Amino acid sequence: MNDTPKKGWFSRLSEGLSRSSKQMTEQVVATFVKEPLSEAALEQLEEHLLESDLGPAATDRIVERFRELRFGRVSEREVKEALAEAVAAELIPREGSYEPLNGPRPFVTLFVGVNGSGKTTTLGKIAADLTGQGAKVMIVACDTFRAAAREQLKIWADRAGASFESRRDGADPAGLAFDAYTKARAEGYDVVLIDTAGRLQNKTALMDELLKIVRVLKKIDPEAPHETLLVLDATVGRNALAQEQIFGRTAYVSGLVMTKLDGTARGGVLVPVAQASDAPIKLIGVGEGIDDLQPFDARAFSRLLVGLED
Image 1 (cartoon, one colour):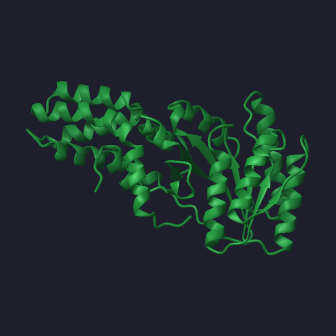
Image 2 (cartoon, one colour; image 1 turned 120 degrees about the vertical axis):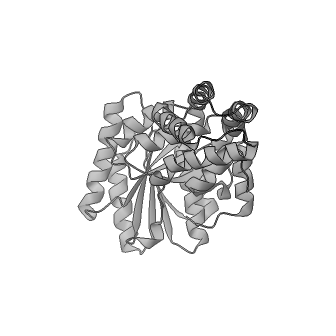
Image 3 (spheres, one colour; image 1 turned 90 degrees about the vertical axis):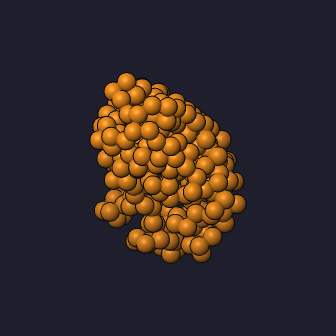
């Protein structure tokens, strides 16, 4: 992904996180501005952070950082700066990057996640970004169970100027992945983006299907897929943790994408999700537009999450 986000995107991220920012900071700021640091104030801080979905482990560490600051009466700005630094300390170690044009060619990315998480839209935005940089991109619709998913992906492929591979309903997803990757290697593609099903009605069958796709790709290249991105929907709050556990420990996830941060007051959930996963956060999304998906910047995210827009 282009690692120079447009200024307008930061404005959208700020607006998108405004609900989360308001929930997290209003009461925290009021607590610390009206009186010097006290154990009662720290207890209130703990309560507010838990309500913002930061999770108990991160909340404990942030409260301890505030305890060590030992400040007296402070301004609203100082409280927000301290909180931003505390959140950033939690997230910076979990920051990653997605750079498919810096890897082997063709670079194969597998997209996993539940239906409705924004997986197909995320794939489409990445395809548009890559073709905009001059890359030759193939999109592969391996969710052969939902015609609507294939139709949506075809629209994104046409919009991005990427080639598109799909098969009839119920076709073997692994067979399609194998044939598409073979074709991409033969025809000199730079990137192959593979969409997968996200049905959780039968988790065992879904994971078996994903692992079969991985196995057949490795028959062509032992290093493939070169990236497996788990797409999570921020609006589901702490349910995103459960999704990470389902996919992250079975599907060999190498990076997280958090979408729909503009649609929730629970943006803080990104913290416990990041810490629960073995994979770093690589991309975040704040809308439906092509430019609304950008590389994850832990410090910028933390500052906007607490209402610091500079």
